[in-house]
Amino acid sequence: MDAFQAFDGASHAKPLTNADPVVVPIYHSSTYRFKTIDQFSEPNHGSNFVYRRCGNPTTENVEVVINEIEGGAGSLLYNSGLAAISAVFLEFLNSGSHLISMSPIYSGTSSFINETLKRFGVEVTFVDVEKEENFAKAVENAIRPNTKLIYFETIANPTMAVPDILGTLEIAKKHNIRTCIDATFSSPYLIHPLALGANISLHSCSKYIGGHTDVIAGVVTVSSYDDWKKLKLQQLTTGSSLSPFDAALLTRGLKTLALRVEKSPKMLKNSRISGISSESVTCILSGTSISSTI
Image (cartoon, rainbow, N blue to C red; front, side, top):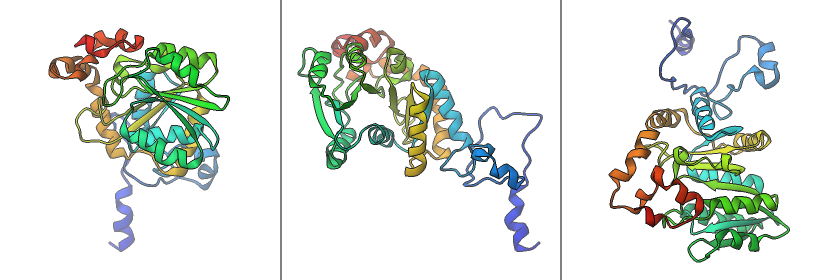
């Protein structure tokens, strides 16, 4: 056996024809081979799978599942929750754009806004959900002619404050402004931002979706296929896609998502996070105090 045979010998495994794996395999190949030059020359090579940064079967499977849960036009997985958040900001904001953001929010998001977006000329107005009696009205008062995005969390990380989600979405629709909701703390099991009228829904998959404290990942789901294409192209050029190994961990986590969310109030009885039970959905949507549900 020569050196080439040893190198090439591992690539002769044939796909299964009479049996399908119950669990999607981890496809960790960085590149893919094509049978003919003509096939490679087809638009998009006739496949999403050319180079792992561009597409991966294991990762795509999770994106499809999450998109079905969220009811969107498409989902994209990122190598962290903050990568997902920053991707949205970088795609839909430019120098001179105005962002309205809820405050307080996740510290990583706040740091990215203050340390990066502002440095590139993005104007920002923070609306304090804990001080404003009418959060939606305060958001409307902050709107400028150059406002391009309204960003807020369903439940503030880490203070657990809750904004008026429906009221804020109505304001955004009235003024034709794109909205992005970070629904990490309420999980895709309890709330579907896109169904409520948001343009973009995102999650840190490191929390409820992963569920086992062993994966860092994020996901963005959009209501518009055009927005998905924009974010996908950006992901190709920034290299922020998720590895198939981490995607496989999310596959496992998704299988018990509903069970874990339903059980979390019992497990966390003495914690404020117990407010995100299924009985709290009305509270979350209306923007009333989440502490009243504990």
